[in-house]
Amino acid sequence: MPIIVLIFLIVISGFSPSAWSADAKKQLQGIKKEIREKKRLITKTAQVESAVSSELSKIDQSLRSKEQSLSVLNRDMKAVENGLEKTRSEIEIVVKDVEARKKLIQNRLVAVYKAGEVGNIRFLFSSESLPGMLENLRYMKSLLENDRQRVAEYNERIGKLKELKASIELDVRRKENLKQSILVKKQEIEAEKASKATLLLKVREDKKAYIASLQELEANSRRLQSIVEKLEAASRKRYTAKTRKRAVQSAKKEGTPFVPPATSTGFGAQKGRLSLPTQGRIIGSFGRHKHPEFSSYTISNGISIAAPAGADVRSIYPGTIVFSNYFKGYGNMVIVDHGDGFFSLYAHNSKVFKRVGANVGKNELLASVGDVDSPRGAMLYFEIRYQGKPINPAPWVR
Image (cartoon, rainbow, N blue to C red; front, top):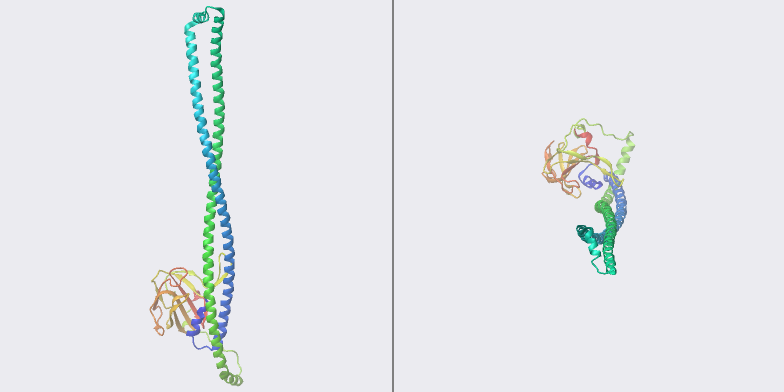
């Protein structure tokens, strides 16, 4: 974050307050820009949160509707199944009646057959009068006709009951299919609800993180504003004393602006020769990065190296410890002054082993890898700066 410039404003010497004031103002502008961006992201995530919450409310209503439909359908199916069972029982009773009637008729026919024609004649003429004979004949015909009608009625009743049974079975199958369809839809809705709930949780976590980041940026902005005011006051104080001297020197000679010569020794000559401060995998690069969801951009002034907790963190080059303490957002942090305006920074350490003022050699142990204030677990955040400004570490290490 830009607030790290506060540390360098304190530890770097050899530059005028006016120069640092200009740099601090630039950093302050960057912080204010980040504040505006964070506010935009908070507004956007709040809108997404509201939309997803509304969708979840509609999903819950749909689920309640489906559950109500299932409840009604289950009651209907229970009633239909009871009706089907009753129809099956009726069919069984009627079939038993038909079988009994058929058996009775069969027994009667067998008896008639065994009696033969003589037996039938004897039955007809068993009466002593003609009217009695005719009555016996009518009785015999009536028995046979009654049996025939009863069997026909039973068969008709069985047919109707079978039709009813088939209709009820069809209704059961239709309701079962409808039930399965509702269950499938209910499962789809529940899956969508789970997905939306996960999204809502993530959006709320993002919003919470943005708010926390905004609060920190606003606090840093206030602190940096105070630094700017102090630097400007110091600059005004020195300006009066130096103006006369500069005017005299300018009048004595004319020339081009001073350009520092290219270094052939010291830190400046180590480009491409330095080792990473710890062994691990680079998980965050230097520069501008686009947020995958919100199309916003963040700036990284260094690189992030994933490494096991407790792994060694070593100085990339000889120098002097100018900062060794906890710094909010960076955890336990160490800054080494390598001379000629070059500094290296090591953050999120679990422990630091050097105090301010200590001289360190190349590859000397400074700290151990940790996750203090780290957003991504155990890792080392590493920067290289020249005259207070961050430079890409990648070309400097092999």
